[in-house]
View 1 (cartoon, chains in turn cyan, brown):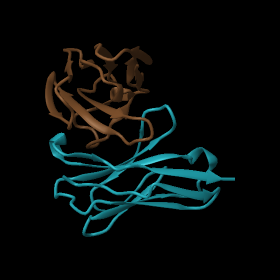
View 2 (tube, rainbow over the protein chains, first blue to last red):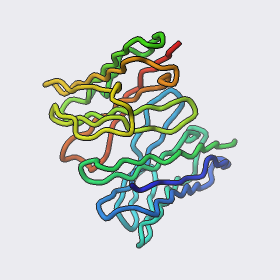
View 3 (cartoon, helix red, strand yellow):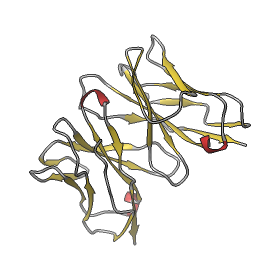
View 4 (cartoon, rainbow over the protein chains, first blue to last red):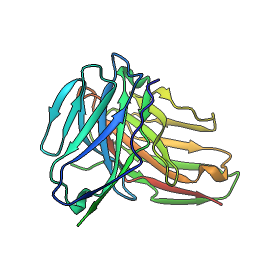
Length: 110
Length: 114
């Protein structure tokens, strides 16, 4: 079972790029990496997903090195509304293995 | 398009009682997932239903159970409630054939056990 580890919290100023790293040393061949954003008292919201290399969408980029033992979520030019908890999920086909990270609480400072 | 809905929003029970939580997935989604999020903690995977069958469950005792109905809605039952069952219970759904492991979450049901 792939255990994930993330920093507990991070602070960033508005307009800066934020990189949040998730460690998943025991990731299996079939595992995908997905990141979610959660605001207080709301369900998590899908941000981005990847298997290897780099994935980019309108919200974020996801960098996965060749060994896939970690992944980095990159948020360009954060704003106050990006203050939230960010979760890293490692899951395989058939959802046989499910591991949510502990979450990283990102605080964006004006 | 309506998102995932959950009911009730809040539920207060006493220890030893049973709680029933309900979830309606996004139209066209066949998989439903349940998670427990205790205060200040991360998401703990509870159950996964697909096409009416329980496909996987997390590390929770048997008093946590559920089912998925023919219309793909789902119900989570928690028997013999304990104080530590107080948490936000989140339901998510996914579309078979869509982006793998992309789940859409509902707003959750806040269960308080006194």
